Image 1 (cartoon, rainbow, N blue to C red):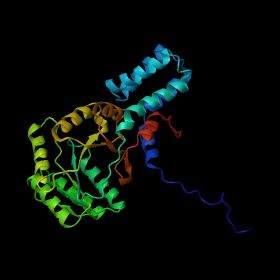
Image 2 (image 1 turned 120 degrees about the vertical axis):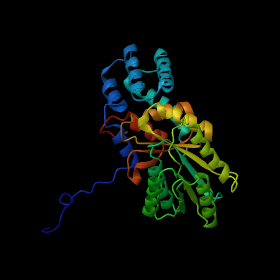
Image 3 (image 1 turned 180 degrees about the vertical axis):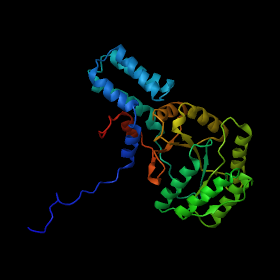
Image 4 (image 1 turned 90 degrees about the vertical axis):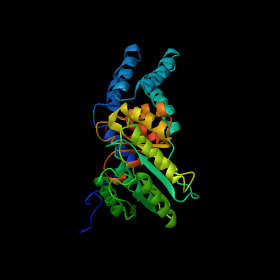
Length: 324
């Protein structure tokens, strides 16, 4: 009919990418694990040279020595038993090995209904993305129907306090703050007390970024835990360590030190959209065996996603421009 548009005439609307699609796109930006293996395997027989090449690619992708040895040991045993007939089977075995390492760490953070306020203490070194992660978490919890409060516990930098206030305004959540140089433990105490008085569901407390080797500053974090436990013996209910995925194997050293000092209960691996090669998540999982709560691939609020082992392995191994 004249004047009636067909489906071909109407402009197509692009569907927004899911978090998994953004993750895969970011990880496939350069010649790293997924790209290398996708171009390496189809043209090679399964022999010692191929296995050595895969081992090299895993190490270059920041998978780490321990995780690489575990993955390659599994492949070597299967090849020796003639269980792998072709490169597709080899690829499948590599995927299964990665899932075996990551699956035990794929534990989303659950806020129990009977704990109020549920306190999340966010820790990490300078530049790891703590404050940005807090802002994204505040929006995520708020969108889930939970009331949220933020505590500006990074009192060493006035800019950090202001930055958290901006996130609070952006997400329409209250922020408890004191002046620059205030005692971080006092801020946490006041915030917990206020959150309980206002019947807040989730309290997210920022802390000053510090090197994991600074014993004095680590002691201050221990003090925060001691002080809030005067109000609730089980608080903080989550000690979330934010790790910059671009730091490679140094992230493991950070995780070990923070865990030894504070008893980390969950991890958020950020900045996988930068120079990170993705494999470091396997290295962290293999060494620490801690729950990986979130992974981040950008600055936007939707760029922080709940960690899923299967989707992450698919992102690592999917060839560019192909859905896993």
